[in-house]
Length: 180
Image 1 (cartoon, rainbow, N blue to C red):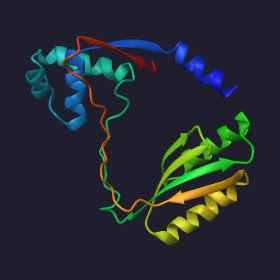
Image 2 (cartoon, rainbow, N blue to C red; image 1 turned 120 degrees about the vertical axis):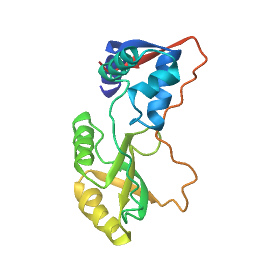
Image 3 (cartoon, one colour; image 1 turned 90 degrees about the vertical axis):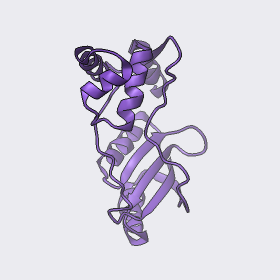
Image 4 (spheres, one colour; image 1 turned 60 degrees about the vertical axis):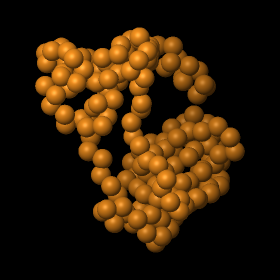
């Protein structure tokens, strides 16, 4: 049933053509979304009103999904990152949606993915320390009632972290799927 829902969402989604200007704008905005429109327009060689219209269209189509400030959790004292692989006892659509809804409400869960393989979900969890992780596991994972098994992995070093999607600015045009 879940496969059909995913397939239906893909089938019903719209497509949007990104030309060289759109891709250059997206690359620039992902480096600094506070760049003034005037500066963006100069860098992509278009007028300021055209630049503003294009950025607005990228937002309206859902290609730009949010304008946010990235905060370094380590600088705030959240010194522990954990990757959890979680298997559920019951993988019915109802139980999976309940698990996803619960993870969406938990502030320590930074990311939650439904995955293929031996586990059902992959979580990225950020906490202050090992005691906070232990409390999280007891309250959220062990206390959920539907978790059959979970495995934790703790990164020893972050070798790379980016949030941007890199766009080839040389291709004439690419088609992307949009949510709206």
